Length: 354
Length: 269
Image (cartoon, rainbow over all chains, first blue to last red; front, top):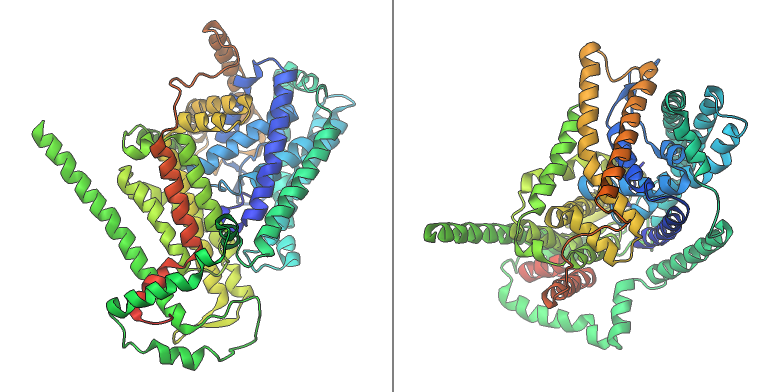
C-alpha cells in the first residue's frame, strides 16, 4: 500500500507531509508529556520488531498463498496511539530511505494512510470499544479483526483519493476503488488474524504489557480537538496554496521565477531560444535531416480527437526531444565514466607515491 | 527467508558506503537532505507525459555515484526491485489512455508516454533517496532531522530502531530457520503457530528494550541524544544546495534535452 513519489503530485505530497508533520509533533508532545522515557527504547525495539515481522511469511489457511503482518494495529495496541504512530512513521522512513518503498514526497501520504487511520481512528473508536468490557481472547479477536479491516479500508480509500488528486494515472475513480477496496479487505482480514494471534499470546503470557499500554495513554495536556482543528486549517491552507500554485498557472515554477525576478522579460523564452538558434546554425550535425517536412505533414493532423489539456505535440520538437534525450543520457554516462577513470588514476598515483 | 538476509545485506551495504570520506560525504547532511527534497519535488512536478525534459535529471544521481564512489549495480538492483509496484499501477495508463500521438513518423499511444514518464521518474526518485543514505548515513540523517526541528522523541527512537533492526532481524532469521527445519516443505509459518512465534519474538524484544533502557540509564541517559560533533554549515555546503537547486529549476523550465536535440537536428527553433 506504499505510495510512490512518481505517482504523486507535489501539491498532494506537500499537503500530506504538512498534515503528517502536525500529527507527529502532537504525538511527540504527548509521548514526552505523558510517558516516562523508558518508552523510547521500547518504541525503537518494537519498530525493529515490526520491521522484522513484516518479512516473516505465514501461510494463509485455505489458500496456497502466504502473507505477512503490516503492524499498524499491533503497534497501536501495544504502545498506545501516540507512540504507535511515531513508531510506524519511523518504520516508513527507514523503508523509504533504505529500500525505496514509498518515497520522501509520498512519505506524508504513507504515514497518514498506514499510521493515522490505525492509531487515531481504528484503535480509539473500534478496538478500545471492544476491549472496554474486559480483555479476553474473544474481545481481542473481534477488536483486532474489525479495527484492522476498517483501518486498512480507510487507508486504501485514501490511497485512491490521493492518487487521483495527483492526476498522474489515468485510472477512473470507480474502477480504482473497486480494485483497491476488495484487495485490502482480504489483506485486512489477514492482518486482523495475525494481530489477534499475537495480542492474544501476549495477553496470556504477559498480561501486564497490555494493561500498561491501555493505562499509558490518557488524554492529558493538549486537547485533541484543538489539534484536529489545527490540522484541518493546515490542510486547507497548504493544499489550497499548493494546488492554486500548480493549476492557476500553467507552470507554477516558471511563474515563481517571474515573481522572484520581478519581470517576465528577464526569463523570456525568446532570449535563450535566439541564442540557441545562432549556436545551432553552426553546430547542427543533422541539419538536412528533413524533420521539418515531417513536422508539417503530421503536426496539424488530428489523429483521433482533440483534447485541449494535451499540449500540442509537434513532430519536430518530439524528434529533437528524442535525439536530445539520447544525447543527454550519453553525456551523463560519459560524465560518470570520466569522473570514475580520473578518480582511479588519481588513487593509483597516490598509491604509487606512497 | 532470503528476503531477510537480503535486507540485512542492503542496510549493511548502505552503512558501509556512508563511511566513505569523499567530498560528497562531507557535505552538510541538512544541505544534502534539502537538495534531495528539491530534486524530488521538481521532478514530480513535471506533467505526466513529459519524457525528454525529465532526462537531464539523470545528471544528479550520476554526479553523486561518480564522486561519492558508489557502486552502480547494487543501487540499480534496489531500484529495479521497487519497480513492479510502479509498473503495476503505471501499466494501466496505456489501457485507459489510448489517444494516439505522433513522434516523428511513429504513432504511439499517449498512455505509453505517461507510463514511460512515470517509470523514469520513479527510478530517479528511488535512486536519489538511496544515494542520500549511502552518502550520509543514518546518524547524520538524524542530525539533519534534528536541525530541521523534527521532534526529539521521534528522531531518538528512529535511531534506536535503526540500531535494533540488525539484532531483531538476526533473531527473527534464526527463529524462522529453526521453524523451517522442523517443518520441511512448508510455505511460511502456519497460522496456528503464528501467535506464539511472533509473540515469543515480541516478548524477547520487550525484554531487550527493558535491558537497553536500564543500560542507557546507567550510562546517564537523560532523554537526549548526542550525535557527537556539531556540524557547521559551511559556504560550500550552501553552494552545493543552491547550485543544484538552480540546475533543477532551470531544467524544469527549459527542456534541456530538447534544446540539445534541436542543436543537433536543426529543428524546432
